[in-house]
Image (cartoon, rainbow, N blue to C red; front, side):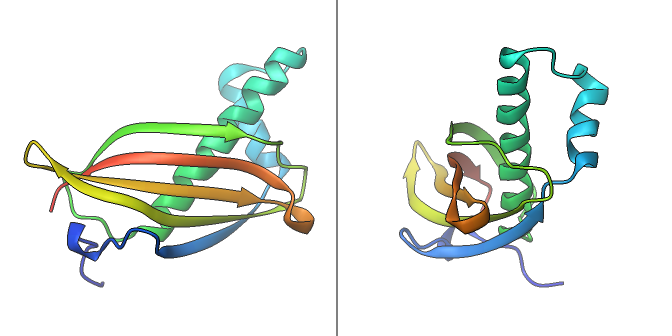
Length: 133
């Protein structure tokens, strides 16, 4: 196992890596087991936003790894441009937007961008983390 990613390892403006996930029916059915099948446009929009958030977190966990224990997820923002289509491969890129020390805490800002077939925009996210070391 490699050494955990430390605060000093983050370089603002640097690409950290990417993941590729295929959006399959099983993924949506997991969401529907919890919340029920979408019954209208509002439900479909909520499902799309939820799935994008899950994909963003999975990409972060895969790319920014291993992480030291004690990190805190402070905030996230997501802009949904579209929803993944069934059996579409979603490419998610993670990059470091910024880092700073405020009140003795190490803050890291990550950008997470996802595209589908043909480079179609799916979502853009921004995550703020308080990094342990």
